[in-house]
Length: 247
Image (cartoon, rainbow, N blue to C red; front, side, top):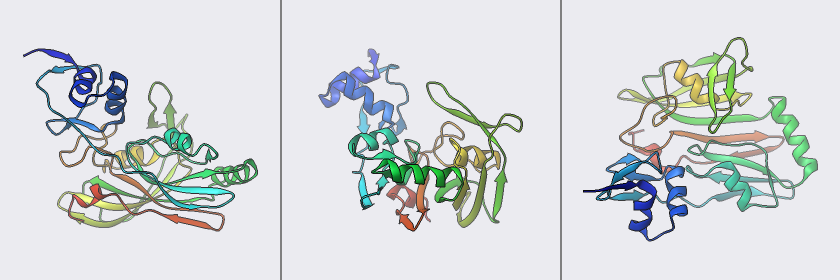
């Protein structure tokens, strides 16, 4: 039994280029024996059997002369969405593994007005998450967050250097030792929900960066359900992974 780099073995198995194989691993859609493959250049047995998760298509929720609202699937980053809809510019971003409502602007006049709404915390942003632990009562986390930029962003609570961030959590239901919750945020700092929930003792299921792996899903169980800006209101239903937990 020999070993080789994971992306090379995946390329051979699927009959695709090394570049494409590496992109799939980096997206987080490749598993081996039920575990997400994290390092494309890591060495692995040449007998490994890879599985690739199919990524749903990006759906248009609404569009007019000013705004485009899309339903972003997990495993797609915000800049990929912008690259598909080249005539639009991003208004907000979702993490790669976060699904749901994402907004783009079609013209600079509207974009400027919309950005002011985001900056003034006048945009309503409601999420759904599945977390570890039993959430029985509503609670808030009102603690500043500092983000350290690098090859990948990392955020933490920092009372001195952090920027204001408010997260409001309302329980939906509890099943075993997991809870489905509603999360409404102000400010929208990088990884705000993930950091605040981890701090509160309720890390999001599948969050490898701020929590722990899950045997049931291979993604962060966070979904942007409702966004309201000006007179617009957009909603997206949770993806099917949310129904793996009996909710």
